[in-house]
Image 1 (cartoon, rainbow, N blue to C red):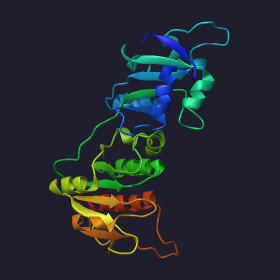
Image 2 (tube, rainbow, N blue to C red):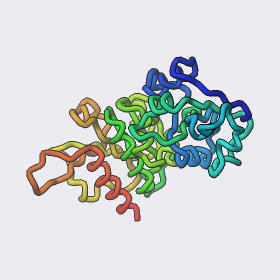
Image 3 (cartoon, helix red, strand yellow):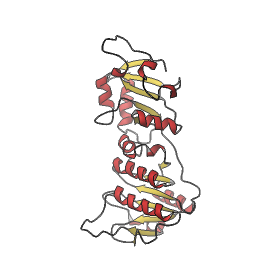
Image 4 (cartoon, rainbow, N blue to C red):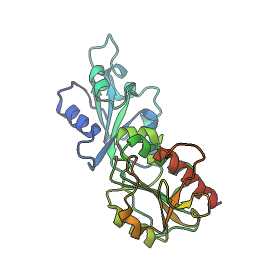
Length: 275
């Protein structure tokens, strides 16, 4: 951790990081986290940091001609004593860091960690449920639903297609929940639903108009709540894999709810049914 280097925009490592942040190869072995709080939560979750990236202004004062020690760099940081000697430290020129960081107002720390891996549970208890996202394309919606899963005590979130749950926007929208809730990705819908059923979960899929009202008791018992894409919902081709279809009745004139809002209502109903 003693090695501190100042990097410009054309440096090979900076180019690699840009590709990683932009999602080139969504199934890459590594992901990028932003912000000291999120990095700290990654450490709490037992993830091993491989690289920490900070802007030059956090290391070098205006009057300095060379890099300071890593101790100076992390002065005042709660992470200072938590990084082991294997962590690579990259210091970028401020403008390069701003262009690299995924948010409009970047926090002065990025970190590269191995992509967390999770599996669908082999068994669900009577009050447990999972949230399954099929083709949900907006990473903000994916992150919000992972946050909802954390808040309602869901056993896991299964992501099939759609946005990568480890894209920076999804991680930010999850407010750190993606580091606490098991998130399973990389499987197809049929395999995922069959594994959930084999674990004892009832498969309950959502439809805008058809199905059982969500508050009628259909969301009790071990189950998997399946939500579809923002624009097309769920393909009825999965009907043979579904135990029940559920709808959310609305008194007003809106045709449907945003998928994140619909998932929130269903998850809280499932959580309440398990109490």
